[in-house]
Each structure stands twice: as structure tokens, then as C-alpha cells.
Amino acid sequence: MTSRVALVTGGTGGIGTAICQRLADQGHRVATNYRDQAKALAWREMMLARGCDVAIFPGDVADPDTAETMVHAVEAALGPIEILVNNAGITRDTTFHRMRADQWHDVINTNLNSVFNVTRPVIEGMRRRGWGRVIQISSINGLKGQYGQANYAAAKAGMHGFTISLARENAGFGITVNTISPGYVATDMVMAVPDEVRAKIIADIPTGRLGKPEEIAYAVAFLVNEEASWITGSNLDINGGHHMGW
Ligand code: NDP
Image (tube, rainbow, N blue to C red):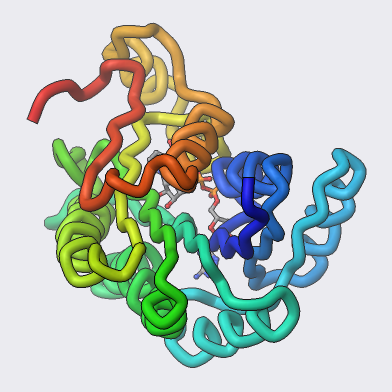
């Protein structure tokens, strides 16, 4: 397998950690961003103890300038980014009739505008070099909607339109662009949901359990493969059967 440079945004989170680990285990040189240096340094130590060397760079992906600076810092240290996983995300759940403007904008900026902020400085280099993998981590709720998540569902649905447009524009340049839509995965994001709500969610999942971060990382590794070069503009649902069909 060719060793590539991979940037995974939000790599210090639950799903991001598993993606970083999986890509590093496959021999790729992996970087992620952070906002809180102390937290990121502790995370890096934890990963090193697991035998996983992930480079960390400061950068809030919701801010266009710091995101671009972060991309340039990654490329200066590791080389051109060949694999980009747009994974950073937040929730600010509340029903829309109670939603404040900051809850809307924070979620759109972090989950969707970040995709512009990070992909824009990366894509031209991928086109010049004639190889690239761009993967968006969207959500089941960007497909089916969710009570209390008009902001999050709008951002995650927006990722699909982005993916299929970018896939068309770059298919002739050796670049694939795909979306993964996880169902409910056992990370801090989902464990922050009240217990009784989480129990109802699990009761609705045909496999009867939450997903594991490693199960999302497995799909990223699949799409990154050299052999996956004809898979572009697709969405991969990984949700234990929670949402099936179109
Ligand atoms: P976590 O909350 O565990 O991790 C989120 C990561 O994103 C953290 O590393 C966080 O860093 C980072 N991040 C958040 N905001 C920013 C920002 N402005 N700039 C840079 N980094 C930022 O979430 P998960 O691992 O559960 O989720 C990862 C992705 O998967 C998200 O996009 C989420 O929407 C999506 N997803 C998750 C599901 C789940 O069930 N868990 C289901 C479907 C989709 P920091 O430590 O600085 O906050």
C-alpha cells in the first residue's frame, strides 16, 4: 500500500481517533487539528502509547483563515495532503422554534462551512498531482432529519450536495469524493444525549446496539484504498440498519 499524507479534522474526538488510528496502522502519515493544546497533547501521548504517531496542528476549522493556516502547516511538515477526512463536528440541539441564531450558525460553521474552509486549500494540489481522496463524515440525520436537529441535519445534508458536486468536478483528476453517513455511534457526542432518549434510539436500531468508532474508520479505510478509485459521489450508510433505502 502506498503511504499517503492524510488530514483528519476533529481527529481527537471519538470517531476521529479511530480514523487516525486506522489510517496510521495502514502506513499513512496522519495529521489532525486541535483547538485546545493541553487536550491535544494529552491525546497525542495516548495515541503514541498505542503505537500511533499522529501529528497535531492548531486550527479551528470553523474559521477560514485558521483552517487554511492549519492546512499549510500540515503540508509544510508532512508533505501534500492526499487524503482529507472532513470529520470535525458539533451539535447544538434544540427544537427550531426555540433555536437561537448562534446555535444555528455554530453548527453550520463547524459542520458545513468547515468543509469549504479545509477542502478549498487542499483541492488544487490534489488536482495538480492527479490523485486524491476526500471523505465527508455526515450523519444519518442529514438523510432522515431529527427532532431538535434542524441545524445539524441541514449542515449534514449540505455535505451530500457538496460531495456529489465536487465528485463531478474532480472525477477526471484521479480524485474521489464520498460521504459516510454514520448512525448513532458510542462517542461523547451520543453519550451526552439523555439516557432515556438514547435507550429509545437503541430500541429503534435493528442490530440492537450503538455503532463503534472503529466501524466508521473501517469504511474510511475502504474508500481510501487504491482499489476504490471507481467509487465516487457515493454515500455509505453505516447505521446498524437504523435507516434503510433511499
Ligand atoms: P466528538 O465530539 O467525539 O469529536 C468531535 C471532534 O471535532 C473533536 O475532535 C472536536 O475537537 C472537533 N471539533 C469540533 N469543532 C471543531 C472546530 N470548530 N474546529 C476544529 N475541530 C473541531 O464527535 P464524534 O467523534 O462523535 O463525531 C465525529 C463526526 O461524526 C462529527 O462530524 C459528527 O457530526 C459525526 N457523526 C457522529 C455520530 C455519532 O453518533 N457519534 C453519528 C453521525 C455522525 P475539540 O476537542 O476541540 O472539541
